[in-house]
Structures are given as structure tokens and as C-alpha cells.
Image 1 (tube, rainbow, N blue to C red):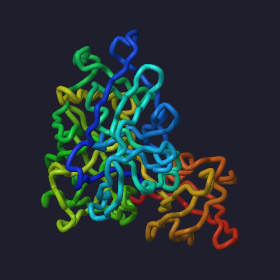
Image 2: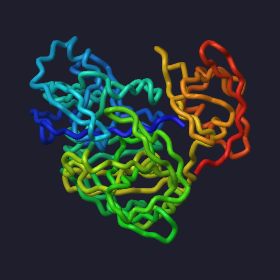
Image 3: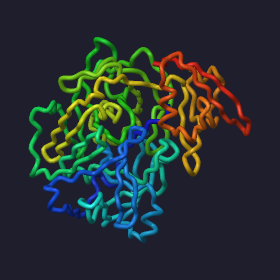
Image 4: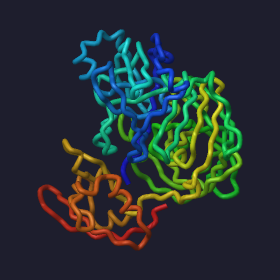
Length: 413
């Protein structure tokens, strides 16, 4: 298991979407539709952009973020950007204060056919996300709702394509398996009104942020409703990473989640408790019960009509695939200049890794006879999710000493 990333910003000081004049430039032969490719790495949608017509960068496509964000201030410093103002934001734990700057007049280009001019971008004073370390993927920023809200956006996970469409030229899909689900929008972010059974037979309506910036299946806030009873089988662990640091909580399974007329079962679910004293302004949470991330969303083709505030889902052949979870107890992160080192962030108590003597801070060097740097983080995670009873041989390094550890995988939840 590697830390899931939950991108959640609470903008206290600026009180809303950053404002700046925007201009859509689209070559006419695109007929109002611009399709761009994306990478799908460790359950993140990564798009290539050209920043201010100079720097080719990688941004996470994030329907759960209100603003577009640059995490590398050295880029705007190099461009000698005249920052509009300095602001304070709060992290994903709703208590950590972070510093950011508003950079006006930024140009963002997507391929040859789409450019957003004069865009206000939020620039973080430091790289609080540390994507390279915690997700094993190079990322320079986040593409948020302040840009997406101007389009009808279509996400095709299987083809690895995003389509931006002029809303005036969009017609709702008819047939083809699409279903319009019950949604509402707040601050240009889509929320799905669904039904969940955290325990079998205990149905409860839930409001979930549809968040393509979250590399998890489901995150539920345990404080959000006293009727939301936790499943019986839980493990205490690190459940994610966001602005402000690691998120601690529990992981279990939701018995069922109804999305429109279809149902998902045994959904891997993270549970986070946000204490009342940290709910500085509940309007930013929009009374939601949690987050629905890419591990659910990538089972669909998705259309988000920001102008009419409608969402359409079409299930793909991946819809019924089982929700797999780590069976080792290892929480792994990438490190080093080339992201070729893999460090144990934490170990679940009583897990196979714990019984084998693996400790926080150990560096995983070899996995089943193959150097870890050749496998990569995503492949190592898949190995640690194999069927119960499978044996995994790890060579680790601890304080300069090499050790061999053998673990037998088992279901943890």
C-alpha cells in the first residue's frame, strides 16, 4: 500500500475562486471540442500543459480542487511574476496553516488547440504536496474548477483522453448506457447524492464530492453524521496525504454503494474524523459526508456539464472488478532524485509485514528477486495485493545492513 493523495484546500483568506480575466482560444476546425491525452499513474490523471508558453509541466486533473495551483514557486520566481497578494490557506487536516501567493495573468496551453490566457494561479510557498515522495509521480501543480467550470468535460479512463467541449455545442447523451445521476454543484465542484450501506442492511443517504484528485475509492468523514456507523473490520493506518501532511484514520469496506441504478459492493473505504474545533467554515465542506475518488470513478466514462450542473456516467467493463487492497501491511513511498528508492512509511500492527519484522524507515531494495527500482512503485503495490497465501520475498536495507524478509499475504480487511 502507498499513501493515497487527497487534495483538499480550504481558502479562508480569499473567500472564493481566484479571479482573473480568461480567454478561450480554440482552433476552429476542432468544432468546439478539444481532446487531450493524459497519463494515468498510481490512480492519478496527469495532463501535460505549457506554463506561460515556456515551461512544459505536469498537472493533476482535479475536479475536487476549487483553484488551479502551482506547487513549484521557483518556476514563477524564475519568470519574475509579480504576485498579486500573499494569502493563508488551510490543509487537508483543516488546521495546518500554509502560505500561498496569487499569480495573475498566467497562460496555460493544452496541446495545439486550447489555451487559457490571463489565468490567476495559486502558487504554494513550498511544495507541501511532495508528490514525488508520496506518490512516485512527478507533478508540478493541480488543474482545478476555476478552469474546468467553463466547459463540458468528458473523461475516458480507458482511452486516457479528456475532452473539453463548448457548452453551447453539447447535447446530452442519449442511450449508449449513460445515466444522469443526482448531483449538485457548490463552488463549481460536483457532489453526488448516493445511498451507502456501511454495514449490510444499514442504508444511509450520503453526499460525496466527485474528486479526480483523490487516488482512493471512498473517503468518509465519521463526524459528518452520527448515523454513519463504522464497519466492524477496520485497520488503523495512514489513510492519505494532503496539504498539511499525512492523514491518520481507519480503512475498511463499505458493504454497498448505489450510484444511480447500479451498485458497487465491498468498496475499500477510508474513514477520517475531523474534530469540530477544526471545522473553521463548514461551507467549504458543503455538508458532504466524504469523497469519491478515482478508484471508483475510473470504472466509468464521465461527462460533467459544469454550466447546466449535470453529471452523466457510463459504466465500462471494469465496473464489476473487485476492490483490491494491500495484503502485506506495508505503507510504501518513493524517494531519491530519480524516485527509485522505496521507503516504508508505516507498518500496520499485526500484519504480515509486522510479523516479519519490517519497520518504518526500511528501504525495500529487491522484490521477489528483481531490484525495486526496475519494478516501480505501482508494480510493487500490485505484488503486495496478490491473493492471500502468496509469498513475497523482500530484501531491505536498514541502517546500512541488508536483510531478507519473507511475508505471506493475507486479507487485512
